[in-house]
Amino acid sequence: MEMPGPQIGRALVVIVDDRVSAGERSDNTGPLVTELLEEANLVVDGVVTAPGEVVAIRSALNTAVIGGVDLVVTVGGTGVSPRDVTPDATAGVLDRPVPGIAEAIRASGLAAGAVDAGVSRGVVGVSGSTLVVNLAASRAAVRDGMATLTPLVPHVISELSGLEG
Image 1 (tube, rainbow, N blue to C red):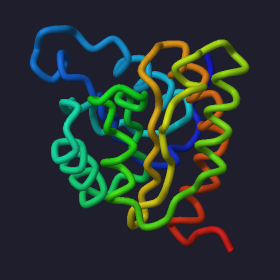
Image 2 (image 1 turned 180 degrees about the vertical axis):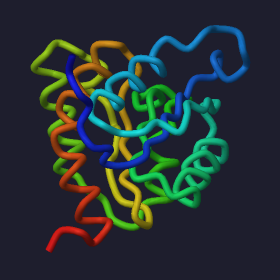
Image 3 (image 1 turned 45 degrees about the vertical axis):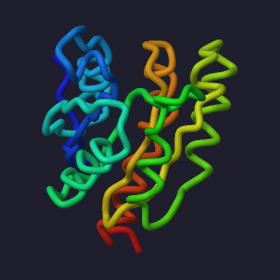
Image 4 (image 1 turned 30 degrees about the vertical axis):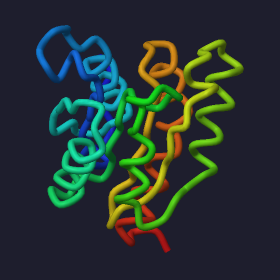
């Protein structure tokens, strides 16, 4: 029997999808992100949905930051269509961008054949003491993005909490 490692922080998942937020379609990526975060020893506070609207996305992000989560992962709304506004909404709540992580997620997604990850406009940055990460919505983009992200999260959370000297 494998014992879980120590919990490294709290996370929230935000699914940005008009149809999911309206109850017209079920969410198929939130459970995947939750599972991958838990495997990385994060406690997932929940999965919330938001339509592809800047105000709704910012509200979800601000609530997470004020709530004190260490990591927010958004899924969806990172492409080039007019309704893809997640990066724009996210940029408005960030104190500092962390472009290297966003670039690594795009590069690894493209290398893995997840076209939506490769052309994603997703951003990564810090708001208060919370790391905010945008992922493209396909399951392939989520799997690859999380594989790229999770090894970096403990270091970033440690730095943001002031525990790393």
